[in-house]
Length: 277
Image (tube, rainbow, N blue to C red; front, top):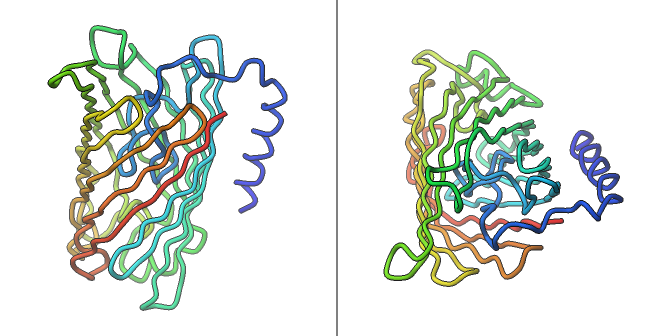
């Protein structure tokens, strides 16, 4: 947890410059927090940058999430910084509990995202952002045991997002498409590469309808690689996000994560809370 403590300490220093804290964007437009630390949905990073900062502001977020499926649980906490609506920096720590092996897998993820073009509301074309996530396992014993080639790796992704105001019977409609280059196994929790490894482009997508200005209901899909030959399957969720103000958001979801490390039918729930400054 030392890196996370350092990151949070750095954020505390930035808070002393609170006159520059970002609150300039429309409610709910930053999205929520993704399980690898980036701004986005729960499973998929979106093109939006974290927080409500506009071009002359910065924003700081902290979040914690928990996913509980049939045979495993995943706890994630992290933080994000948005610098003048141009660059996002993030850090997250994942703790993956494996009761069958009486062990817990820990992974740290350091991320960055740069906005290349546009705004999800005001530009004619979708907002476009390029992101990177470097991941490292604390102990690679389980990953090595199941046949992974490496215990650290780097994902690169390109995301496009757009919010259409009043587009569907007067309701706001959001969509995102992400293309990721990765050889991670189960987000990297089971290492990187393997006997069937073909590092390749993977597709991820999200869409949501805003039932009101502060409640969104949507779905996500994330394509996965089966590098280890253990039947790794694509991920899906159905989520509800509540953003009552510009200081907090709460996301709940039903998850279908398919097969994980040979254990089939990994379904369950997800809950995440993000605080914004």
